[in-house]
Image (tube, rainbow, N blue to C red; front, side, top):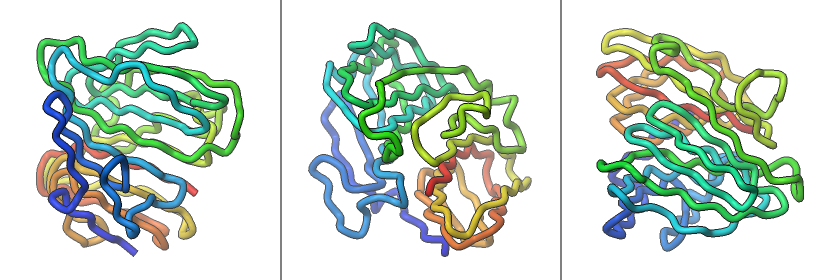
Length: 230
């Protein structure tokens, strides 16, 4: 099954400093048909204005992945961690028993990012945070693993049976990835693509299950972010 969630059908909230589009029910947006996809609970497409951001707030028992599309985000938390994550790079936070954090755009231009929440497999684990650079040219034409529930993968580790992957593909080219039929995959492209022949537009959500191989044909130069979860 491949279900396209068109960008203009997503939940939307414009707070001035934050322009947010919600792929799944979040905050004041509620759609009983879009409560999550497998263990993926939140996928927010956020634009954060210059010199603004999220003030300190708490989380617990959730795996939170931030994929920066343009600009940069600066993180600070109650564990003493602080770091700046720039476009194409990824940060992860395992909220565990509880953590308070702030995310600010300290740049002079807007920052755009995906904020992805995945249900944890380890409730009440110790909280943690990490970030890694992932240059876009290293994933041209193929998917690169960015975060994983397997600490042996050598990438950012999350406490969930899930993988976060990124790729770039040029117009007219295609890439493919194997999948397990029982998994839940969610893909967001930056441009027009065909997913196993099904058309998707820029920033649409593509919910996939029951497929054992995914082929993506690019009609535009596109950046792809994919989560494969239980």
